[in-house]
Image 1 (tube, rainbow, N blue to C red):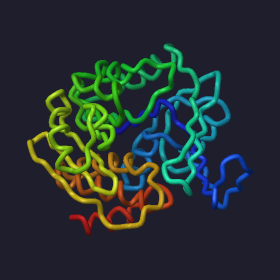
Image 2: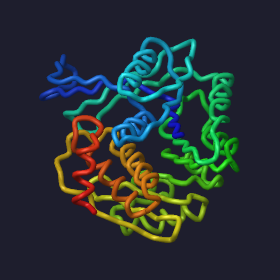
Image 3: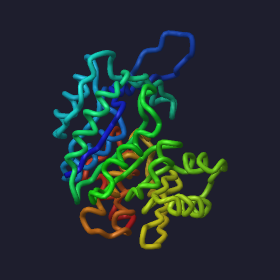
Length: 301
């Protein structure tokens, strides 16, 4: 059983606007409305690769109902917890100006609803996989990920964490199977800037010393680096292609790595599947299909 948790899922309104001008009325020339959130993205790529998972998290209001409807319409099983007040966030992403987006806040999550999620996670058992990914609502403490891993510790669960700053640092003592900072996030943790795959290695190693078993560092167009639990270091450039939409490429890398590991228990294969999945999504309008991923995998491997 694989569970992905998205604390703050969203409806992503992805638009392009030709010749965008501040202070004036702009009209879209393309629009896309998709369920968003890092855990949901991981579940989507896993589904595209033929691996079942259950998407967990919190949803509220009419946007929450639409997130849930669209997730299940995509063929992904969900078990979201309903919040009585507020609405799930809407994130506006402007494709025509790369990296420009406005993200909503999301609903307030009460301690009672957090405990409801905890009880769902209590059902996980040895051999199951738990993916914690993305930001949390402002109403939640920044140790929530570590509280979850503390509660599930000792059960033989494979934990994957894709988070930043304290959310990430607080979980390392519980020895998560995989963490995936990008090079900006890795540099931020150690108050430096990382410009190359070689520069990422010593800082990734420091995260291993703090408890992470495998550290996968994504570097956008520069490729990725993996420091594996067995002491191996893998690094590879990104495959050639045209950037279409970088949204979800990091989540796709996590899902691809996880799928590769579950398939063969081989780090090299998992690493290449991660790069292929992340790059294929970056080269696609939305998250990559299996054929797009495997085409890149053959080129990389």
